[in-house]
Image 1 (tube, rainbow, N blue to C red):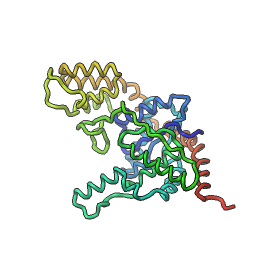
Image 2: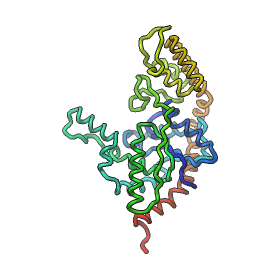
Image 3: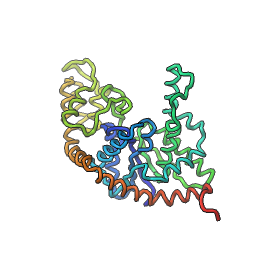
Image 4: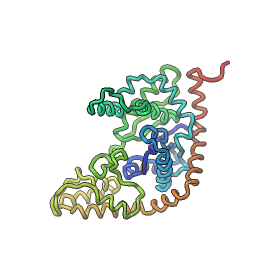
Length: 336
């Protein structure tokens, strides 16, 4: 196997939602079909250990996320599709990188700083109360995910750019201390793919419980879309599409011409009920066939397991020999 041209993972901490599709799954599916690219896509189950302490939920999430990727057309034979925990070289590399990463760098991680700030605002004497080493050092695990396959480009949302910068810092330090083995990965931010808003207008996220599941039934999908918060403007009153959650979701799925036409309807005063119904019909049509494939896959988890194990074998064709080079560089291995 060759090193990765592209690499992306999704944390197995819940049901895949529309935001996952727009931000990670759809671009991955497109890249996976390119025979000129070596793309790696994985289920980030080690990352899910940080916040999800429910084994059944993690297992179910792994099943649902893998099924979603496959149902939506991921070419798992052309790309490398695997489960993070099936690659033992990743945690070993994580420890090697941990031993050369400055604590000060981790102190600056957004997630850690946010947790400290929350403790301080709650009046806790210990600013690190409830913060695990998993949360504190997970940017190093993320760096290992990327560097293990020497990924050249890593598509991320704007909220993940800092972690890619940290990965570059860690890789550069290793290259300086030991041997130049790691490519400094390029951060790829798709400016046209905005982060989707959820039911309450905040970022669509499992953490906020404001997400719209990707493969709910038609009835549930319609119900969730109808729950999206809107303002009090009535029918025929002009509305601003740029501040509207409904439009942001529509634009993420629609063509440029379709979005332009919808914008014009906003300026003329489309009714919220009409917009919600049309959004439901538009998304439902896109997901109708993949939903059938998804339901079939979920009922046959053995088929997914076979695909993941085959992907792990392909991934380890690269990670095994590469870790040997890393171990030799740091002086671990056979004496003499």
